[in-house]
Image (cartoon, rainbow, N blue to C red; front, side):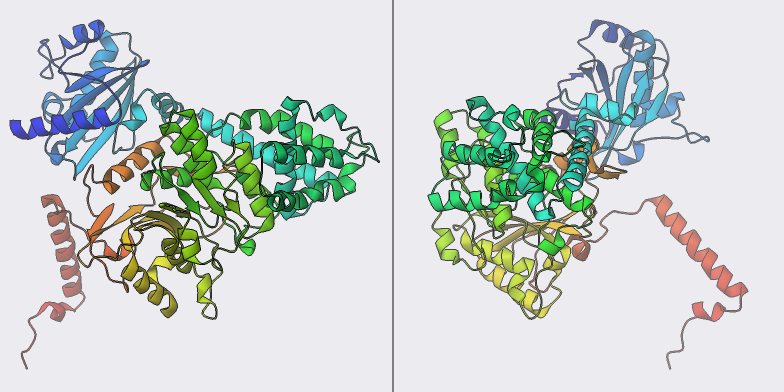
Length: 635
């Protein structure tokens, strides 16, 4: 048993190290805590007692007690409370952790303590956190897979959300953004009668014009409703100046963008002074964007603000984007793509259906964070991000979005991806592909529009041994038609499937699709004995909140870290989460298809099953159906 305990201690140490948490083993570096533990014997003799690990993270104290055996995780008394009797405290991980936390709370000034009971091994384990306050009151929380939620960067948000039941700063920011989007939409509808497809053009165009304020070639105060040199013309001129300043080339590309932004100067209603506003709607929109969005937007990270505004506008106008073949990808998915692709600052990234450029923005952000050299950063922006977008207005938004992010627009093209020869795209030398293809566009009459067709085309467009990550409906990888089955078979002849991750059904909240992420290695035929990973990541820590939509809870970081640890083989898990197996083209490439229960039933499970069976048999006999259990006649 001692050897097993040591292995568990070392495993827990590795978990803490991965989460960037430093705790002390068998004691504490904090004087008052160490003094408290000098009388913390679990036998309650008044002698010393020490948890496996203990230490402070900011204002919080963490206490960990572990056991090697999974059946020594927790013991509940007859009232279903964690027993604090001597034997359970000594023998069970959660009981021991709670005992130490309550003892420390009583004998120190620490008022916020997280106690953890840990049991098992990397594959089969439980990590149960408990919050204990200064009075010794406690709250048992949902099990976690890692300690990442409790490091210095995350613990305050976890405490705010899980203990105080308040919104975190991120949730408040999300709520505020959605509120602002709703307000702007209402203003666009009330004062401008702007078409749905023109709304994001108007927003992104004004954002470009606002960039000229710092160069003193544009001023909001200049928007006075002049009927000769209109507010729209002034904004249009500022857009043109900014595109020139951003060195958007060739000239035909710049002209194409300006033709889309012409709606700003050509829509008469928004250029006339509105009596209720006392100014033109354009000035009203410009003031709103400057005060509410522009100043914070300039300092944001990989969040695709314009994309979020676009999504909100579509939801408010009663559409879900599918009629336009557009399903915008949430930020947490674009960031996850960068992790799954193991993105490096030397990579070249291609998104052939780039929409508002969410993937390219996330990739640029990730690559720049890894590269401190300014010249190499410029190279990343200028030469390592490639995108295609078929819809002219979406292409305009994507280009604008990249300009607002500090370049990266040079290699965006207004082209039809499927009509472009993969050999031509392969010459760009991209070794990472990311894509959210148009959904539900394919049919038996035109199988080229299936999501799996887009996937094959992207794989053929990358250099050999490239990483390719796509998000598609689950139906794409099950192969609901003969045409899709043929494409799946052809993909495996030329490329390698690494695995598929089943996602939360609300990932595209309001759209009504069940998505999954598929990861491939391009240009390497799929070996027959190659084991793919199929992961059930439906429980991802994101939840739908009323009036807000899909939001990240503090548990999402823990679940995401566990996903990445399993995906890259840093830890093992049971088949409920991940199945590793060889595949065939005709298989349904989903966790649900390959899943089997590999857990050995406990004695209690066996006894319950037998009891249920005997009850069923007795019931059949008493109802005159005992013959069902008699040995059949060989004849």
